Length: 262
Image (cartoon, rainbow, N blue to C red; front, side, top):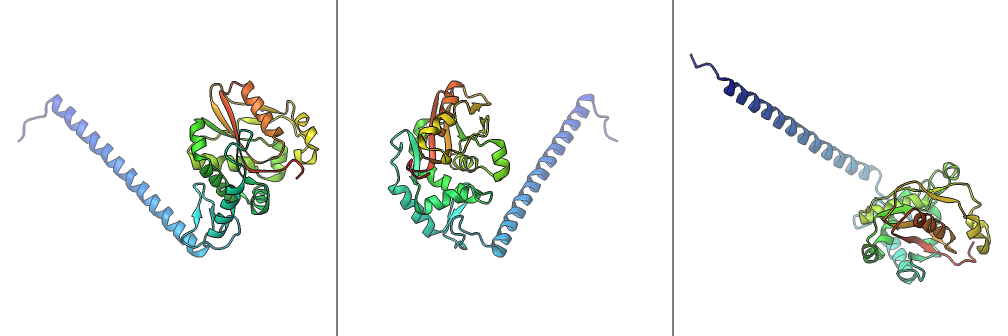
């Protein structure tokens, strides 16, 4: 018959048992996480077999050499080349006025921007945002951005439309660059849509319409929108952010339109 355990021995057994139980629990959690990843991978592969992925722009079925964006949208080779050509001939880095621009508001890029305004345009917005971020990756890095912020849409207009292109684009830029995204700008009133006003009246339309609901003091902010014409909307956002203490405010848009485009 063995010797009775001392108090210290009992304590050691309890510690060992506890450690074994904890190790077992960690193993089970890791095993379960591995099974979850495997199931998600198989589900994605099965979905691709039944519903092949499509180009976010032209909606053709995508081959294996498609051009995926970090945000999930993907482009076929033809659309990637055409949109890339638009970027190549678009406004230079800085846009001539401190705004990063993907390309001119024309052709396929114009059609794509208009589709991003629909509730079904999230994938296309992700693809365009990835192109924008890739084109200006070095500049965005040099600006030392802390936060990506979408141009705000009034809540009532957003309910009616069902989506916000600026929000989807800002999220896409955030995913492509690894930067945080925050909807900290608020449209205080439902102003007349800018494209329904003559260029000279657009700045007055936004006076006092945009405010900030979050801490931006000392932060460097990148404001994202789909199209810039006169720059009045971007300026209203910049003014609000500067007034809230932002250390620097910069802008990025998918397309630059002429002030006569409407």
